[in-house]
Image 1 (tube, helix red, strand yellow):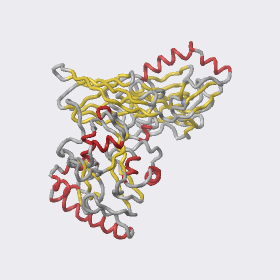
Image 2 (cartoon, rainbow, N blue to C red):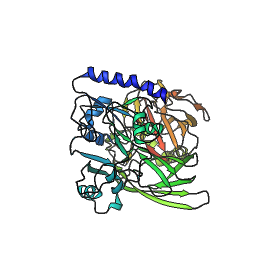
Image 3 (cartoon, protein in one colour):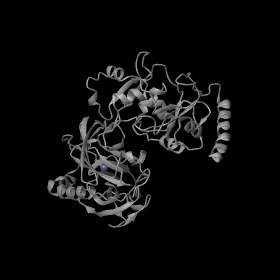
Image 4 (cartoon, rainbow, N blue to C red):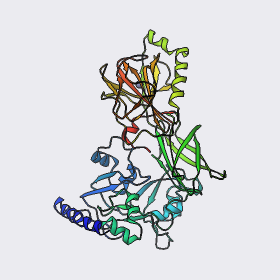
Length: 478
Ligand SMILES: [Zn+2]
């Protein structure tokens, strides 16, 4: 403790010094919720369930400005604990509405407490007539601190606004919570300074910020809202050891459990799922066999995928006959739908090719003037024939052979129901059973099978569903 205090003091001093020389408008939030518009630098640590839109609203700036300042290519993907530079932040724009994306366990009561307003005010502002029907990913407009003098408001125990010259240890002492828990809950270094104006989650604060049905203690779902063609991650903590299973839009949701009560699942939302609200059904089985069935409503958005027309010559069209395509599809679908409890992947995935991306996942496709009945099931990379194909993450090779449509094909099982495929290669340099590491050369770019020129088609399946592999290059799972 003493050593920590000692180390933190020079850092705070340095920070104040830097603010002093950085410009005439240092970021200094006043006490409580009062603060002034500023032109300095603010850093925001992304919290659970936050969207870039909500963060932009909170600081009176735009999604585009934050994305540009942080090199974010797709604003839908930010990760918990990520540090964002907020250009020209205005702390606490008076009366500025915040957009809150509903998380599992959110109720009007818990949201009213978190944002210092009332359930009635949130309901009125969002035309909610039945408070029982909030759904995960629903976006609510909330006027923070909008409670009037006559309203009874629960104290905002779950959020704390950082005062100037604070550090984690001092805040933890003040709030009476363990400093390590506070640091972990907010992705902060335990001894480092924290910026004034930041809002911190206070773990173990009076009253849970979420209102989850027993036996769930915590439940996060990322990203929200769910998007067609993308991967969804669930992390659930149960009160006691349990076994979890679930289904979402007709597909099983398989959980991996560690420490008895920590449960994680990854699943894909099919690219043709229509935008809407869908039930996520969960069953929790206790060691004595007692079962609890829970259903959550989850919003799914459309992915905004484009369309493209493909022309194939007569010889290639022969390959489109069902006699050829169906047995191959069966083999690929069966192989790609495997579930291995061991996890090989870790951190962000790399790219399987250095070539330029020539076609994105999800694009609706028609062949030779037909209807848009299919979608592009992977990401295409252009490239000189013979350029290397790299494993984007560790895994085990489960298929390596020549196929009529997909050409020289390789499939890697990364564990937890995550598998990737590599089609049209000129050569395959791994064999079934090989354990590969991230970045290892597994083959070479080619134009074998049904292909209109040399390219690598990179495909990913999660939980038996084809999903956009590029999400895994930008976002860490689980
Ligand atoms: Zn392709």
